[in-house]
Image (cartoon, rainbow, N blue to C red; front, side):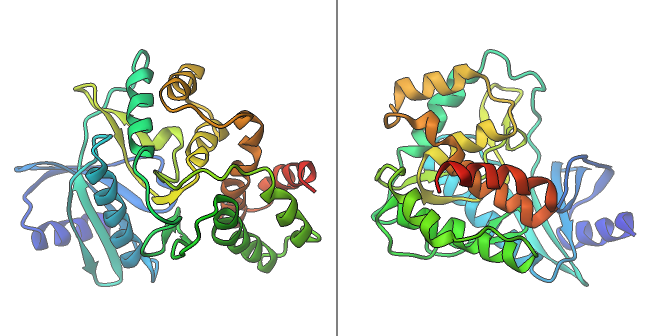
Length: 283
């Protein structure tokens, strides 16, 4: 079925395929590289009812990152539906497996991205983090209020519906506000783990799979540390270029809480204990 579907999509998009190869690591979409007569492309396929919207928001996020001019961003070639399946077609970026020695360039690019700001937190439209809705529409101008209202509360509410209990959240939210510095909104990637950062064969830092918003910039740094893969050099150089507020390392858990909640709602019980451990620090 995948080969037949890909052939149908290729015909619709006027592509002549030489061969295809399935890419590993996609937990949400089926992902393939297409070797075509006009070059190489990546295609994502998903049959979720909201996948067409998910792909449209991904295209919007890539366009926002591209306009910032900080990282190499793959071109979007097309998106659409084929029967019950939605697809997303974009540029394939040949990458280096070894990122050693390039972290200064990455940190410079990240600081440049975060240098873009807005009058309020959020974005004109909601989007997705993984396959979950991410709520952006707001006129909020305080970092703590945005983080609690638009990031934590929706995830805690979803977790409650999924059968997880966390006690008195209102007092937790009130305590948390005092630990969040009131920095201006920064344009962030929003899901910046190691697999979403690539180094092209020409040495350009590149980003994929965004969950963009104007949000507290420490969120990107916290996500970088959550699953590892970024050396201390990346954080040190960033902090030299764009100095962080005092005690930023002690706030890592605050920002990681959002990403852990997302993983709890996507993947279940294994993320419950890390969440309650963090909450215990700020009760």
